[in-house]
Image 1 (cartoon, one colour):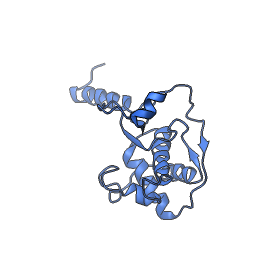
Image 2: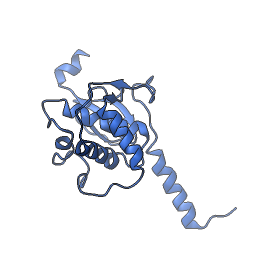
Image 3: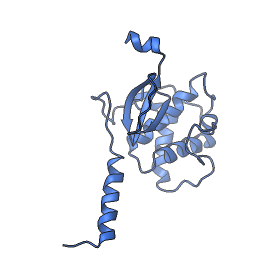
Amino acid sequence: MSFPRHSLLLSIIAAVGLSGCTTGNVLGGLSPSTASYAKPYRSSASSRDCLMRAMYFESIRSSREGLLAVGTVVMNRVESPKFPSTVCGVVSQHKQFAPGVMTRQVRGDKEELAQIADDILAGKRHPGVKNAKFFHTAGLTFPYKNMHYVLVAGGNAFYEKRSRKRRRKR
């Protein structure tokens, strides 16, 4: 069977693109179906929408695990005194999430996004994220020594920032 060149090229691009969305756990042993739970968040329609936006624009075409991990980071920030205390405050923070996260149109399966957002607002968390409040595209590397990686999911690498003193003790 022969493919036109552009079909073959598109197939290769799709395969490479999808390989970036595979999930893997840096620490091993954690199942994506295993969830941890935190205190439920007093949510509103706007906090649900903001959380859905963060998950969608940071994990487009991601797995449920990747969406849950991004949502967990948002909630870790909400619970931290170093960040705004509301979901929308965290998500709309300048240069913290994808450009246009609060203004661009969300497309795709909004029902699944809404369900995951509701689960997160009810207290569900990705156990592999732990206390991580940061993530970046998986595969990128940075020279900083205070980045402690805890999980790779949905094409993102999740990490905690730790002081050098804390790193030496471990």
